[in-house]
Length: 394
Ligand code: ADP
Image 1 (cartoon, helix red, strand yellow):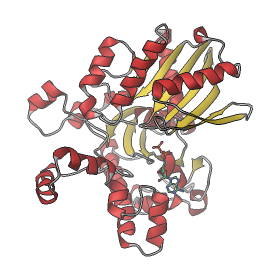
Image 2 (spheres, helix red, strand yellow):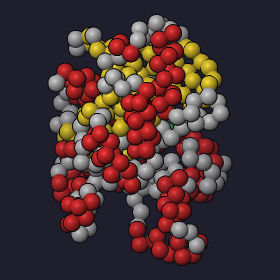
Image 3 (cartoon, helix red, strand yellow):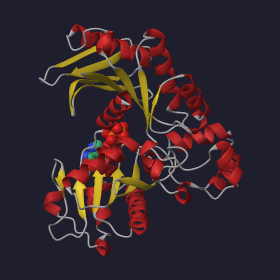
């Protein structure tokens, strides 16, 4: 039996799922989350399949310490015997540059992730620090990374190429990579089971960060994020597509440095910057309902962004069989689904207002709709765990 510990790291958050694989079957033995990593006190919650939930507070300095903390709780609760009981740890790693797919965490991988850190400054350092720290604490533990760019390795070259001098692509790797690969892969695999005839799928992952992916015959053929996670749709607090020639006038007018300007574009833009209210769509919608014009504009612009990419991707796919909404916004906001879909009648798509109000996974379009619209919860960790398992088998 393989037991694999999957980690999903955010700047101050640590999420994990611990899987046991037996033959083709897998089960989650425990899952958990730590918030406020690096603060004086972190809140930790671990859940077991029997419904038990262990919650507590502890001082957790960094992500390596978070792993040790969770490991010791699982050991105390009899889920893990000792280190030899863990076949491997797996990371939902972000940017691997020239590395894609599922890879052993070794010196070469660390060097490549360091090289492309300027393209993923908010994410790669956290993963690198955890990988190095866990290697130091547990040198015998096998570490494997699945990159978020991996699912997009099938996008045609013409669609990952920017209109910049060719040598920038060759020498610096300035091209589209795409992210949220585990989520879009999960959606592609799930729709393949639920709607076997669907060859042309658009997966909309809308949440804390958002991206859209076009899938043809199970393979990614287009996605909105680019060389970094900053482009494509605008996000809760990130800019999305933006005109680089605006940088100079912004910096000159406000006296910002380049770093200060980029920090605003990556942390204080998107829904937050536009609405001036919040990075949480729920609060933006509340403000819009109360008559806040900026909040309404932020929501309308976000929906219009999504609609535009769906239209572009329906053209790439030469039609559409399934449209999927996932992520915290995609699954929970029926208002957003309605707003986006009301302009897709030309594809023969018809949303069912009653089904669209559902709070569980399933179809939200009418029986007559030519495009099946789904509300599906994603499960990125299960994809990473499956990929790590395949890697171990090989
Ligand atoms: P992450 O990308 O961090 O994993 P999620 O996919 O869980 O995040 O999405 C979190 C986001 O979902 C929140 O920031 C919030 O804006 C949004 N959200 C959650 N519930 C709703 C809702 N009912 N309506 C609109 N947005 C929602």
